[in-house]
Length: 122
Image 1: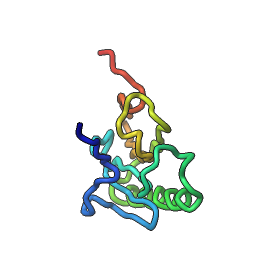
Image 2: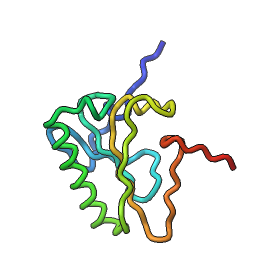
Image 3: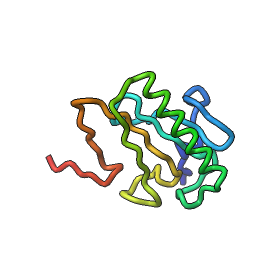
Image 4: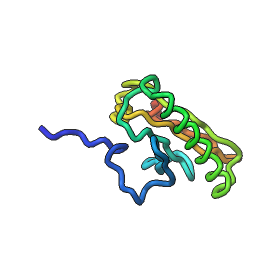
């Protein structure tokens, strides 16, 4: 039986947009908009509620840094910032907590997908 590899633990260093002592910003491998990124704790944890106070401050700092960088690079109108907590929607990645920062652009609707529990019935 093969062991699952966590994409948020087993990332390439060259993929890192930025990082600090407790977390990193990575590009989302299946983006919903231009610049869609994720902020991850470096420690493998499943829930926001397992994050230590130092990690929480670190992730918050990285989220702000990602927002500022995305504003400079892509000039979005705003952002959708969200995370799932725990094992929801059968998503394998939910085993490693991560925060999505999704740039929103004028006249471009955000189409959430099965990662958010949305099932397209068309």
